Amino acid sequence: MNLRLQNIDMTAPSSSERLNMVARFSADLGSMTDLTTMANRIIQELCRAGATTHGALFLLDHEQTCYRRASMVGSIAPGVTPSTLAASHPLPRHLLATNQIMTQGASVVDLQAHHLAAGARGFMEALQAARILPHLNKDRLIAFSILGAAQPLAEESALAESLLAALTQTATNALDTMMLYEDLHRSHTLIKRTDRLKSLETIAGGFAHEIRNPLTSIKTFIQLAPERKDDPQFIQEFSKVVLDDVYRIERLIQEILDYARYMEPQLTDEDFNDIVASCLYFIDVKADSQGIKIEKELAPDLPRVMLDRQQIKQVLLNLFLNAMAAMSKSGGKLRVQTRKLMKPEGKVWAHIEIEDTGEGIQDANLDHIFDPFFTTKHKSGENEGTGLGLTIVHQIIQEHHGEILVKSSVGVGTTFFVSLPALPA
Image (tube, rainbow, N blue to C red; front, side):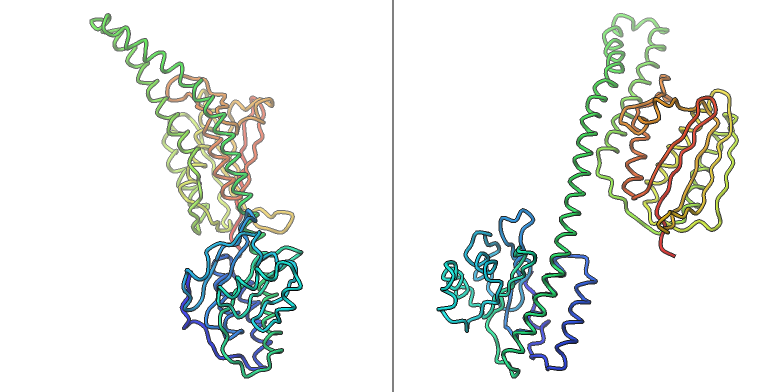
């Protein structure tokens, strides 16, 4: 990005402004959360302090093989300043070895004292640079700033250089923190992608297994239909079987697509109780028809939560419908309770418990209920489980930085516990 020169005050700062400039600069960088924005702010401030006509900031690439131009300031031709510079180039190697500001006024003898200095000096002259500032932290050159032709300064040169050194060190500390944060975020994203790929391997095997039986019945019907087209009982009964199998394949494909899709929540400030009540209203008629009594206790002091409303509705409906399926034979009670939860570290969470009086889950199965294609439902037709519902539920809760737990007793029932971090009061 090439920022306009008019954004920079080319007047050299007075002595009384120097400390305020460093303090303000440090505060500004501390409040930034984006590396590009930070790079723009740094090169602007360094150009202002150095009273230069133009400048550019180069950042070490995350693979540490080259330096990439992150920001440019002033009327500088892109062809003069390259977009990348290899980490093995004499300039960054010289800056790493000396950790000193390069200036036009430095004597040739001093520069040639290092075997890399001649190459660094030649490149500096080609860039038409007045100064090159190293951003060195823990023996690692994470960036360097190139400042163009300098305008005359009224202040003493030593004071100007000390100000630039202070600003450079402040920028170095901020850049190092931001780059470490971005490396951590990049690693976290890579881990999530790796976990998802591993799950997709399981899903691929599960899909092949799950789809085999429906395809067999469909294939059999197609093969027999020409011979039995005049048999109304065969056509009627086999058509129903085939239609159920087609519905199953459709559900299976949709759930795989839902799981495989990267589910970055679109967070909004929401009333969790309102979402719970909405989902309970949706299942009320079906629960009544199955002899299931719904009891709800919604805490009036429940904190608000940043969440994706549609994704959390998907989670709740899945858990509610699973609970009802566990009580479908003889009815029962579905108890839904929300409350404010205080974690040991003092953080506040919105918590919900979903308890049923159904068949329960065997201890051997509890550790696997969130695994792809693991299911305890073996009925045919619409009630047959694909084994992806709870996997998707678990994924959504993870994407919201929440927690989901389950306890169950065979013949007594099952309780799911879901917690989401609340908004600060």
